[in-house]
Length: 346
Image 1 (cartoon, rainbow, N blue to C red):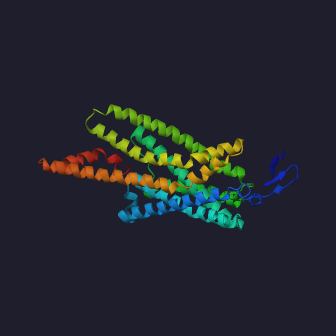
Image 2: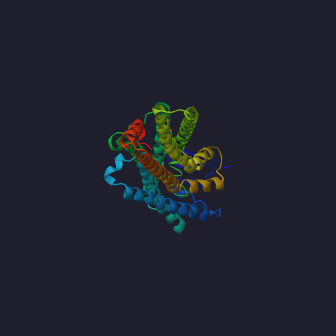
Image 3: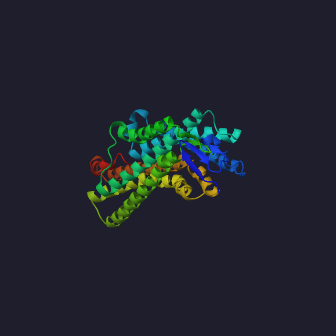
């Protein structure tokens, strides 16, 4: 049996059959097995659909609301745009390297180009994971403490965290030669950057999955319990609870989409540490991880529908007040005031 060990960024076979220096020494995955196009064609289709959805979300959002008022939009609406931006840039970089490999059946060269693709993937995969984790934490705080996180003026704290942290990590990894081909696409070098990839992607992803799952379950149990308690309740406190529940449910959509997109990669990360990964699971990774734009599009449609229903409900309530001989301004104002803490969330 051949045993491989790492030393000074070089992996050497004890039997002396072959020395693997970097990711370019790894055969292009799928050619020998006859599954090459089964990997890249579904991935390219998912990437293209995801990219179209991401651009549609961004275009529609700024078409119906002015760019200058962006930071006055609700949190959910801004989150959708941030996620769509991550998806679009991720898809653009990932499409290029997948297409190159699919056409040439070779890994992208020079290595600096492949490292750039890897940096883009590391940046926007991590940014999405951090973003959804912040959303899950925000939901938890909203449900349990009736507060929401303060992201600072123009969301600078949020943006610095979700984009700045992975950019710094990616630049360090790139400067140390950890980015490059892994046999399937450009990410962390399959030889030099194997363990860096584990600690940069697999470990944080698993932590985020566990934390999000715990927060998600606790939040929904609390919502379920309070929903039963306020069924027959009236008054301001009941309206505030319902408003916080609506806000939490809306933002929970991002957490649900996160699980759908990244469950396969999380399982893959664990599996590869203990055994060879079956091809079916690898196929799931290349499919589900590339449909973020589609999932984000579904979340966007739900948020827009709820926003429209809310506007129609407010208009109907206003018309009913006017029709009953009362002025609409006072009662509506009192209702909105009671829910003002959550007005910029849903």
